[in-house]
Each structure stands twice: as C-alpha cells, then as structure tokens.
Image (cartoon, rainbow, N blue to C red; front, side, top):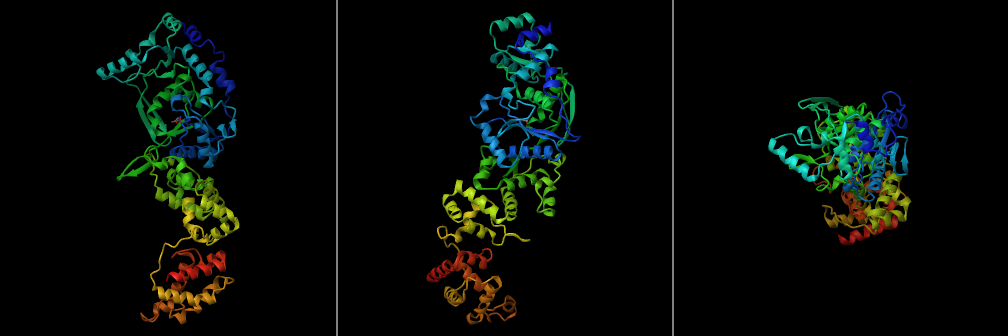
Length: 548
Ligand code: GLU
C-alpha cells in the first residue's frame, strides 16, 4: 500500500507537516534546568470539583516553585459533556482560589505561544499528526459501524478475548487503498485508528512520580485517534498537546493510570519524548468507617460552590488542601505561622498514593486558624463581601458602619493566641449578633440565682464608666464585690472555706456579660462594651434586669 497516497486521500486539506509543528511552530521552551511545565486540563462541564482545585494547586506549586510554566488547557473534545458557560465557571472558580495560570485559556483571554489551548480549535494540528502516522503506516481509517463493533464485542466475550479493536478482530486494519477509496466515495463515516505496534504478552514499565514503579500490559488495541468528525480522542489529544506544549510533568487524576500504556505508545509512535507522569489519588470521604471517592452527586462539598456559599475563604481551602497534599505541611505551618504557603517546598513525590480524606471538621479548624491570623480590616471586608451575596440582613449591619464592623473584629485579634470563633463567613452572623440590635437575641442563661444577678447589676450600673480602660474596668468590677458578698480575687475565693463567698469577681463580670451580650463567652468584655457604647450597654442591662 502506498501510504503517502492514502494520507493524501484522507487529509487533502492538511498542508503543514508534523515536523513543522514540532520544530517551527512549537519550538522547545527555553527554561532553566529543573523548571517544570505543567497543566490543568479541565473539560468544560461547568462543574469544578474540589479534587480539580486540588490537582490544579499541585500543578501550580510544581510549576511556580521551579520557575516553570502553568497552563490551562480546555479539553472540549467530548461535546456531549460540554455545558454552556462551562469554561467561565471553571476559570472563575480557579481564579477565586488564587490559582494563577501563565498560559492558556485565562479569564482575560488566551495567552501564550503554545496555543491554541482549546482542543476544539486544534483540529488541524491533530489531523496533521494523524496524517503523519498514516504516511508511516501507523494509522488507518476504520469504517466499522456501531453494530459491527458490538458484534466484535460479543465475539470477544465468547472467545474470552481482550476487548477492543485489535488483532484478528480489527477488520479494517488491512483494507486496500481501493476499498478505502470506495468507502470514502460512498460517503461512509470513519474514524482514524492507531495501528498499534504493541505485542500481545508484552509489558511496559514506567516510574510514576507519585505511585512509583508501575508495570502493565503493552497496549495492543488499535485505539481511535480521530473520531468521525475529525476531533481527537482524549488519548491522542493528550499525547500531541503535551508533546508540542512542552509539558514536563503530566499531573492528573489517577483514573488515567490504566491508560498510560496507550499514552506511552502514542508518544513512541509520534517520535516524541514522553513527559513524566504523576497520578494524583482522588479526594476521599469517610463513610460508615470506610472510604469512598468524594462524589459530585452525594456530597455537597465536592463542588467548589459549596465553599463559596458557606463562606470559607479561599486561603483556608488552599491551606487545607496543602495539608492533604504533603504530610509535612502542617509541621511547617506550625513553625512558620506568618509565611505565605508559597514559601513551603512542596514535594510531588511525597504525595500519598491513596486518596486523602476530605474532612470538613478538619477544614473548619484549619480555616478558623487561618482567619484568626487575618487582620480586622480583612475579616470585615471579606465577611461583608460574603454577606452581600448570602445574608442581606447581616450585610446591612456590617456595611452600615464599616469602622464599627472593623472595630468589633479587632477585639482580641492579633497577639500570640488569637481567638478562633470564625471558621467561615456564615459563622459571622452568630459571632456579631450582639453588636447589632437588629440581630441581637438572648439564647443562653446563667446558672445563678436571678435575684442575686439583679443585685450584681444594681451595684454595677452606678459605677459603670464607659471611659474606663481595661484595667480600670476590671478594678471597678472588684470594688462592687465585697458589698455583694463576692471575693474580689479568684485566689481569695479558692482558698476560703466553702460558703464564705457567693462567688468571685469572674462571676460578677459573667452577669454583666450576660446582661450586655446574652452570652456566657465573648471576647474581651471591656472592649465589647466600649464599642457598644454607654447607652446601648445600659439599656441592655436594664432590659435584662426586667427579665430576672
Ligand atoms: N480532561 C481530562 C479530564 O478532565 C484531563 C486529564 C489530564 O489532565 O490529562 O479528566
């Protein structure tokens, strides 16, 4: 068979050559030694899974900490899965997590010299490489219909043979030029298949950066390279794109591990050096004592929109994902509280081989820690922005007086042991409620005789001075203790015979706290009262006394 003639029959419109693409259109990248070129390659389904953020973060860290390049490639070869606006939903999602791409389909438009970065715009490139394979006798058209393919499958089942189009089952493998020409003239649809050079019984080995040494059967299936519309399959597009784009490390979900034999073969027939592969295990969820993949259908937290809606700051999610990615991250963070995560030396080869457990409790605790280190201005700004979208009443409160909002978040912030009351912005309503009359409600009670509480407040009201600083405020609390039969010092209370005192100064302030805030636990009460102001504090105290 004259392969060149066949190539010309199949691809008359292709004028460039594979060599031109390899050498001129996509020249080798000039990057420093060790620089990693990675990519995140979502399909435009519009759904960004938290596992996708995890994988893109890993790609991002590898590229940027080595002075390399991070690309975003859109894999839209499966039109059935495509959603309208699917791309922008993914781009916005990644952007909200602060994952910045250097090349590819970016929010502000396409960027980079190795594009186009949307696979559906690259049909001519794939066809050129397929034509090249035809010229070298490594690809052929297959006219089998769906019925014929199911017939083959049925026969293979009966024969207990490896499924797929291969060997004796590959009917179109040896069609003559004339047969092919006739079929094409008759308008029969066809796909382009690889003439797999794999040997039955052959084995391939490769070293996965995460999973280690992997050995598998050589691929013998004549896989589809181009579908009948001339659009490539994932496998072919992956090999062509990652070769031309100079990807050094393909870091992707481990559902692709079992296809690496196909991919290595494709790089081989294309005459291109394969990248390194790193297969990331999926994010898991604990269920009934076992583990299963975090599921788009069953688990709301699988979608990144969950985190936005609950109000987890992007910083928290990233921080948590890093703890899942490398087990030494948490120790590093404890030793380096104030450094950005980008200072941590991420290790791809130290990622777990089995899926990390996504635990919302742990996320909450990581997030509370992250938020505890934000300054008040940032907390107020982010909480207000969240409330604007998700809690109108809270937004009205926070936005009415930004300085007041900042003031309340500033209480007990900073310092060595900051409070960790807020893990997500949806916690803010509860946290700030007593600072706003519109949100304030009393839900807790104090275990102290109401009549005694009333006496405490009767003593406190005349001495309360909103101008007091923290020390004076507390000293004043102490001054009313003796008349009430309370110890002015906790020590004094503890060393005295039981029954000597009704309580101590802490119990006195607990009553004031309950009166003013309706809570047993708040940040520094003196600061809270200063912010609330005299009028509001006195009114709250009086209202509370009425209830006693
Ligand atoms: N488009 C593929 C997917 O969504 C990406 C796999 C890869 O990164 O190569 O699974």
